[in-house]
Structure formats: C-alpha cells, structure tokens
Image 1 (tube, each protein chain N blue to C red):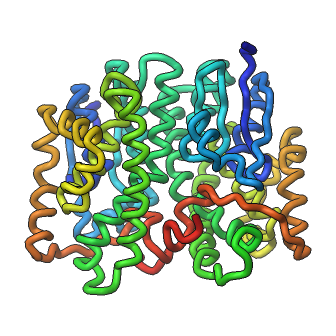
Image 2: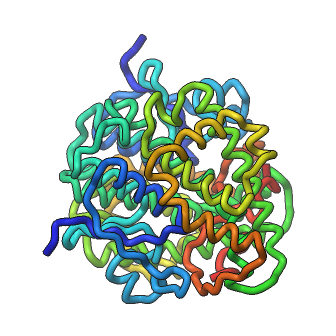
Length: 248
Length: 248
C-alpha cells in the first residue's frame, strides 16, 4: 500500500481548495482523486460508509486512516509532516489563535457561502424557485464576516499573525468563490480595502491561480447564464438553507 | 497578575459547561466569572472589544491572552496544562479524530440546540410568536445528529475511542440541555439506547450533576410555564434561525 496521502476532493469546493493549497505550499506528497460531486457520487451509501458519513469533501486517506473536516485534515497533516510553524502556529498561543479562527470560520464565513450557492447552483439542482431568503441569509452572514476579517487585518498582515496560516487559506478560498460568482466585487472591495490587499497578496502566490481556475470558469459560465447539470445535494453550505430538509 | 486562568461563562450555555467540565476533570486551576447573558452583558461593545468580538462565551483569559471558541480553549488548555492524553488524543491519529469530531459538532449537533432555544427561550426574549419553523429546523438537525452519534458509539465506548475525550463533553452538554427542556426524552432514548447508556455513564461522573443543576432548574421552570426575563440576543444557536438578522 502506498504511503502517499490520497486526497479526495472537488475543485469547486472552498474547503477542498484550502486543504489542496496547504498541501502544495507545504510540499506534502499526495495523489488526488476528484469526487464527482455534480452527479452526487459522494451521496452513495458506499461512499459514506467508506469515507465520510456526511458525504462531504475534502477527505484524506493515509493508508487505512481516514480524516475529513478541512481543519482536522490540516491539523493531522501539519503534525504528521511537520509543516513549517507558520501554518498551524509556532507556539501554544498562536496555535490556539489559529484553532479559534478555524472554529469561528465554520459558523460565520463558511456559511456565507450560501450567498454564492443559492445564487448560482441551487437553480441548477432544483430548478427556478424563489431562493431569495437563502441568498439574503448567506449575504447577511457574509457581510457580518467581512467586518470580522477586516478587524483582524487591522492588527496583523494575516488573519492570525504576521505570517500566512491555514486560517488565511480557509478564508481566502471562501472569497475566491464569491469573487468567481461576483457575490463579492467592487462595492465590497471599496468598503474593505484591507481585505482586498490581503486577498491580492494570497492570489499572487504561485499555487493560487491554478487552484482557482475551475471555480473561476464555473462562475463565468453561470454569470453568462449557462446551466451546469448537477444533482449534488449533500451539505452544500449547510446551515444556510432556510428550512432544514427542504433542499435535501 | 494572577497566573490562574479566568473563565468567563454562563451555566446555561452548553459549550461553557463542556469547557468547565474539562477543566474540573483535568484539575486546571481557574477563577470563574459568570457573564450575565440574560441581561446581555456580553453584547456591549466594551465586552466585545475586550474579550470576544462575537460576544459569545465561553472565554478564557490567561494573563493578557484571550481565547474563545470552546474547542480552541480546550486545545489551548490541553497543551498548556499537559492534560492526560485521553482528552485531546494520545497520538496523531486520535488527535485528528477528536479534531474532526469538534468540527463536525459545530455544523451538526451544536445547531440542533435551536430546538431547545426556540422552544424555551425565544418567547422570553421576543414574546409569543410563531417559532415553529426554527423549532422544526433545530429538531431536524438534532435528529440527524443523533444518528451520527449512535453510529460512532457502535464502534467505540466513547465518541472518539475507548476513553472519554473532549468530544464527549461537547456532545454530552448539548444533550443535557435537550434533556432539561424535554426536547430529548423517552421516545429518543428508546430509539437510541446506546446514546442513553453513554449519556448515563457521563452523567455518573462526579462533576456532571453540579454543572447541570442550573440548566435542569431552568428547564423545569420553562416546562412549568414560568417566563425567564432575558434580553440576550447574541449568537444563540447561530445558524438555526430561519432568517439571519430576524432575531438579532
């Protein structure tokens, strides 16, 4: 059995791109397997039993050991591959601050993804319906979250200190999707020039553009009115749906 | 300046009780300060600037260093006080599994708290209104989450292995509130005897009953129809509200 990490992911997923960039930046060897989310390959019982009961990606397999949840994956890989200390923290305080961000992220910025998802993808899955409440809810949380990011960037060049950490990758890839779908564009950037500066700095890193290519293309297609055939239903922007179970 | 940890919390908060029990079980010295959530003391700008921009509890202060988010607090204290390895994991795999649980928790079981909150507390804050959609949403996520807990308890005595970990405390204290408010009672226990057995095991630990006394009393008051005067609005069961901003 290969000792290389198996990385199960999809390039349109924000947490997948964050983990992908982390592995590329650190130089962790991995074999990637794209999970066909569009056809719902992750929703089969076999997939859930084998990899992740939630059906969500990213997932890594290290031999027979499986980890899901993007922040837990980064935590595991950081320890196993002894990543440079900027990524998950150089000392006990910085490590706690990065953990704190990762948990904040799940209940704030990550749920803002509903603005992107319900604007661009919901119609492709469930047809034309009134998604305005979900979009409004996503935008509300996104707007709220941007204020937090801005506050943290007043204090430090990156979200948890003077160097880039996994927290920045999590946040960055949420914004990449919003930029791809023009959920975040000039009005937001004018309001938050510090966030724009930080976003541009991360965008200039060598791995960013290749990782973003697919979602940028998908965003452009949707903005041009093209439908994307997809059946995926699992856990997209979980918590952003107005009624649980309504879009399952 | 004392080197003892300051613990800012409220006994009705599930994540606060989880951190509180962790500190008591490990024997971490701390001074507790109850934050008057009922009057919204945590919603003042001064509180947010000084402690936590989200206004949420629990919070710890170690000298001038502040950590919030319950899982990040446990992570920090575990490292600083070298807690016994069962709590946050004895090796890299178990540590990752516990991290994975803590992140799953935020988007699943924690949001099931909406069932309790909107059944018992919403009326005390905003008066009699139709909260049925929020309650249904909370119950949906709670029911979904119980299936996950049950699956994990088939494999292991505790959620992440053969010994109790911080993951169990997070999950346990969510269920304590549901039990206090009879959101979880005989029908659920009959359906999930394994979860009931695990719940009873943790309830039998010496620190459990004293930590649960307040919420049990509050639950009994609400079940008897007594109103609890409260203005607290911040981040209660965030993500369970049907429309973001509607109950802010």
